[in-house]
Length: 127
Image (tube, rainbow, N blue to C red; front, side):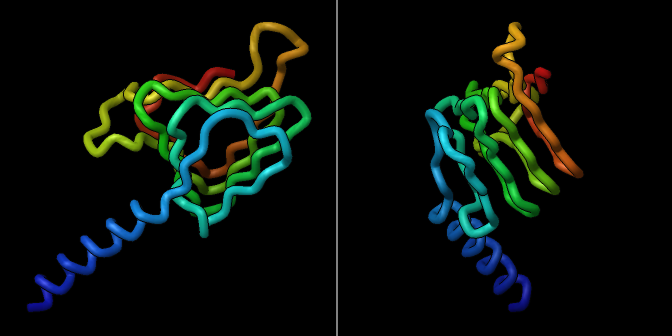
């Protein structure tokens, strides 16, 4: 009986997490904070953090990427104890794009601070 209860409790928690996911895409143009209350955040289409703008990802937050999606950081990304991973139920290495900090020119530079974070199933981290 206890195993059956544990099984249904796990199913319930997984279904609640999916229901309350926060979908994000497009451009972040003002300083923003992603907290545990909105987690997981799902990058449904590539996301850009504009120049002069900082996205702060708080401890315990999960950021999931749909297949082949990217995050471009031209402003700032600061995260502590967050997980960046795939939104695919059967992820494989390289299934989502990458986090790219800056571009090829000095005017398109960004900054990133990741403390105790995990990056899973990404193609690469491009700095």
